[in-house]
Length: 82
Image (cartoon, rainbow, N blue to C red; front, side, top):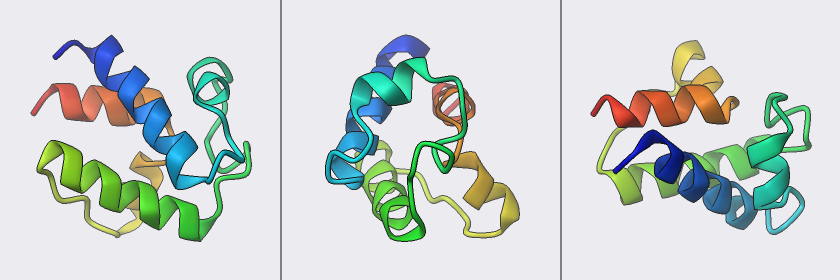
């Protein structure tokens, strides 16, 4: 799977995790941290669960892991390397 395809799927997961408060298009095109777009801590936990289920990875909830799911590009890059 290409990094672009992963990023597009992640954007859909962001939209689902935020119950539509952040659209997939906003997540893809904003270039800002997801928390700045309004992704709260509960939505971020839902996103982490969705990413772990979909990609078979485990995201540590230390500072680095928490920050990882705040940036769509970084997260897509991380998953592409798996």
